[in-house]
Length: 321
Ligand code: SAH
Ligand code: SF4
Image (tube, rainbow, N blue to C red; front, side, top):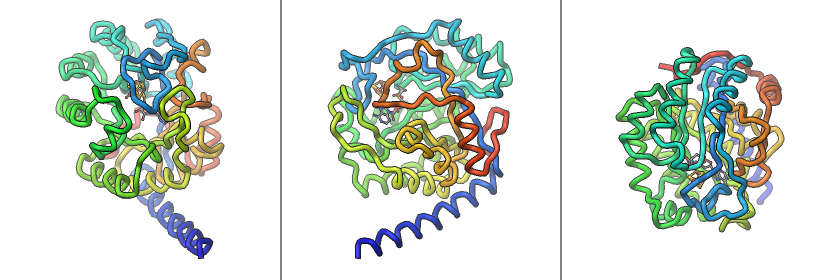
């Protein structure tokens, strides 16, 4: 009985993936967009329960990239065909508006044909505005869960769901292309929560959606919680593609960490974006959001694209329409 149910689930998902691919190919053809990830700081003043960079983790290795290191990552990325730079980091007040705006402005001036995406967590509206004015185009801030009570189980009390929503609305009002997203299989997540995720995305209509499996980190309160599943992550990717046909949808590093060919099957389930890591060798192993995080090269990712039957394109990869 259980086997028969499992089998029908697989057939159902095969059809779901086929439909998701058809929709993605209708708008993006076989194209896969690349985003070069530059992990600028592993310091974080926030304390999300799931994350290895959380402030209370005394064992985390901490570093900051210098502006010159950041520009050198951009230059190397540009030479290998990257036209979007994603500056990501913990919530680190060292990278205040003044320092960040200078960095963004320099990248904007030196690589005018590239998109600049920021992923620096919660900041004030004035800060988001200043960085937009300095030349940033896009902002990634996952909402992590669309259920307020569940949000309170994944975060300490000083972090609040309403504030996260306010940030997302501020970003959109200012004019950023906005990315949100959630953890698949985070501790306490239910089927009902997943339905809420899809309803939230349908209503908010972000231009980008970053989802990936929750993966435990040994020095966090969720060290012993089970990882999110591959099957569920793929199912969510496909459902998001059907819901938001134009969305830029990455097959994330967490998916690649969970399963060796995770990125390839993520692309085959509706994803159209990959994010090679451009961070320098000196910091590679120090940005540990979860245990065993992959540091995949551009070459590895190109192989994943070829295996999926798709093609890497050079360009900013703005959303269709
Ligand atoms: N500090 C910024 C950016 C870095 S964290 C921010 O929080 O937005 C980027 C993303 O990593 C988070 O949104 C979260 O969804 C993901 N992440 C953190 N810990 C994780 C874990 N244990 N498993 C999977 N993803 C995780
Ligand atoms: Fe900091 Fe982001 Fe990790 Fe939360 S998820 S602890 S904000 S790096």
